[in-house]
Image (cartoon, rainbow, N blue to C red; front, side):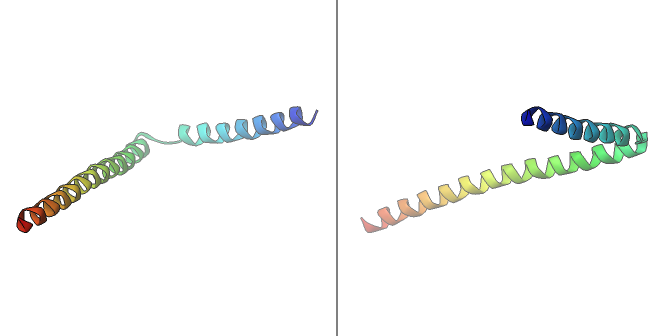
Length: 77
């Protein structure tokens, strides 16, 4: 019996949260939507750039360390 009451409580909280979210989103004007989409695009672009710069740094570091080890072996001969 308790699980049924808990499920109803979770459903009720979800319903209220969804209702408030839809009400808020419905109150946004076209200019507000443009600002929100612009902010999301900026954040998304930053994250994509950071990811690829991080991958490039890892490759350069790997290449530098492999060249460094290769140069040491050549100098020993």
